[in-house]
Length: 435
Ligand code: DPN
Ligand code: ZN
Ligand code: CA
Image 1: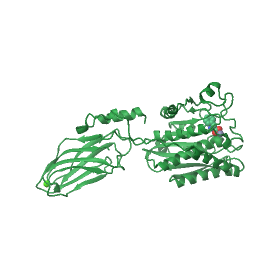
Image 2: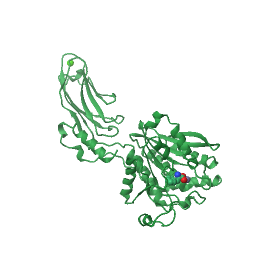
Image 3: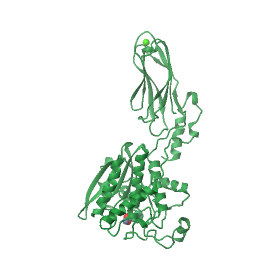
Image 4: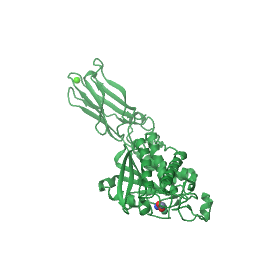
């Protein structure tokens, strides 16, 4: 969600804030609960590249489709993801008479109907190890996936990472994946981010101009670094985002340049060498670990994580102390049916807090008659009071409820039932306070 959309969602919430804190306008404050994306350690990304280089070296110098170096690359990435808690799937296909593999890794959790994907092709051409093309994207996506695991990140959206086979033969693996996704599954994919060549030795900083929200997310990241970007024009549709785009899925991505030549204007703003290709080793045997610009790889790896975090709907809590309250009296029938008082929570992305304060004010002449429950928007029941303290009247108390497994937005109810005859009363007020 864009920041402006989040703020307007919070502005919507303010209309529902009544009672004690009415007028303490949440709309004036920025969202406070968004989890910041981690810095992706360059050393870790470079270690993945060194490992991919070793795999190529041990397998005839490449990691190409149909060659042993490709399957070894897949096994290498898969083992790291399995150890980090991912659910991995190896998808096989046939191309040019050889078996190809896509590796799909799902991070457990998030909304299964809102999937954010990031991917990169893992295959090289036969002429070399393919460290910039595309060890770089593969390693950055891998390290971002591992960072998700390290952070115990629980975004609103479901995260899915992919490493594609046989890209160099014409986007074979990614086309196969998209073509074999049931249309219901396709509809759940709300975005696909592609990273193909992001550590070019004479780098440019190119952003795909496809989905505007994704494009803006990357531009915002680079604006924060003070690094200018350009729109990617070297090869629209020349990588694995194309099948997703053709299926109507919003796409975006980053690129540091292949065999186009850096202009002097580009060298002025980005440094490097004018009149030389962004990657002089593109598709050749010198695409080794020496063919990487560390600064570009570092920035782009951080940008991968930034976008994943920004686009996956990090929990946004309202300003501390935001109250959602209902002060309308609801009479509780003597020894009768349960009654409820409701409040609507809105403008909060993600789940409710683990320390939700539930303010209960029930005027009653015998609290021992009463069963009081908090009901979450999905119907989950949290018992607050069950006919204890019979000799006292009234329940005027704040209960702390661990509501972290509940989606925050929606209608929350206080349910009160009087289970014995003689004494009566009413719900005076019910309020939820976000910490
Ligand atoms: N798809 C590329 C390759 O693997 O050769 C390179 C590329 C990516 C070229 C994006 C243009 C744009
Ligand atoms: Zn390539
Ligand atoms: Ca009673």
